[in-house]
Amino acid sequence: MRKLVVGLVAGALLLAGCGGGGGSSAGAGPSSAQQITASGKVRVLYAGSLANLMEQSVGPAFDSATGGDFEGVGAGSTALVSAIKGKVKQGDVFVSASTDANKGLMGAANGDWEDWYATFATAPLVIGYNPRSTFANDLKTKPWQQVITEPGFKMGSTDPKLDPKGKLAGQALKQAGIPASKVQVFPEEQLLGRLQAGQLDAGFFYTSEAADGKLATVQLGSGFDLKATYTATVLNNAPNQQGGEAFLRYLFSPQGAALMRQHGLRLQPVTVTGDRSKVPAGLDTVLGVK
View (tube, rainbow, N blue to C red):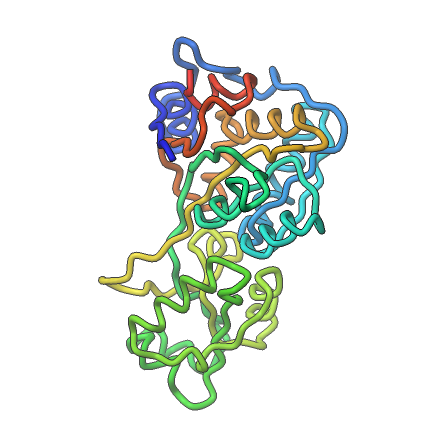
């Protein structure tokens, strides 16, 4: 694998979404999403932690700006990998919360579903809690490692076999010396709703999810460096490859970057991992491979 750190082109686009100067650099792709066009249904398989971003912001904005027809499918990144390899779900774009998920689709042994992926953002793992929980004050005043072991405390997470967040949560528990049995496991797309409904006292979430859900949070503390790493690629044999390329061009435009920032993602200079010669011509300038 070769990793290419993108220079001024994509970096400038993302920095624009992070409060930096707008505009485009020499050789950059479209400086406005209005210059991007798409047609037909564009199916985006995305990490469930990005549901609000994709369904409420990026998807509708992409349709309005490009003429495309966004169709999103959100689930745990690892579960999506299995669905793609098993041909249960078909998509044009795959947006993951872990580089490990991408690696599970690369190479002949994995079906050659992708040749490259672009890493563009992170979101640290935190504990989000229900402020109406009887344990809310404890979470504000005591170490979380102590509180989640208290009798009656209901802590939720996602399945580490299906979702990178669940795997990170497992690492946090192991590091804290807390048995995994202290946490109830739910599908990623259900976890936030269960917390908000009062079925859980707290759960492991990314900061972006917490921001979207307006959750009260507790930081894991020093010594814990656990976070989502968001990536995107156009899948091989995509039914609408041109639509997939248009979606990524929009996602990495100043408008797309601004939406990602609004939803709490920590944008970073884009890096491309894998075979850069396989990056579609419509994206090579946007991702800085030329």
